[in-house]
Figure (cartoon, rainbow, N blue to C red):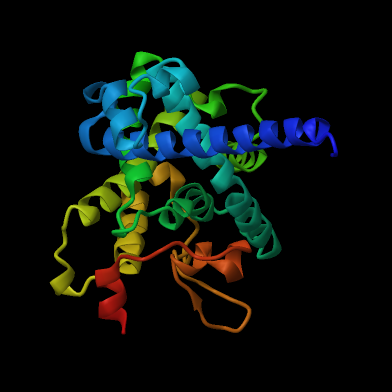
Length: 268
């Protein structure tokens, strides 16, 4: 009879590690949805454990410790998803000579949010982030971007390029202005997810994104792009790159985000 102990012990350790990661992701995604609907302060850790289908009501404390640490973990999880998208979009913008265009840089900052949606086509991370930007950030809860040691090179690069593009604006004021532009985009997604405008009106998500980009320009003249720049740009075939295509496999090197079932039906 062979002694399997040396082989099975590492295997058991790997299985526990994989299970722990899966549990953490389940808690993160459950918390994200609850925070989006009720606000970060309006959700108890016990509620998150129940929503994540954890038998132990202290599962959140076991894996994350505090609510602030869980919020930070949500940011890490999503920022790591956005990094390759933003990196590919920056590369494409560099090839097109658009890295000096403020409108393009704001797109790179905002459009990756279109790739994260739930089974109903809603965007809970965007709603969660809007909650954070309007309330919790002022309370001192940090984002990975705040730590210079955290490796988010694409996000740091796009923020640096925006600063260079409008270097006549003081850094604190610029951060506030960029934040307002991003909040406008996030609020557009939140309003759409809540049913406004009504899907029967036939207004596509691409059209809403395009309109929001135009309003961003009106809200902040300091980030106004050069004349002739639009949210939809010519691609190599001479066609137009729509807002959703800016984040799809042809532009960013990965599969596009999911679309609302009702929106898919209308497009057919």
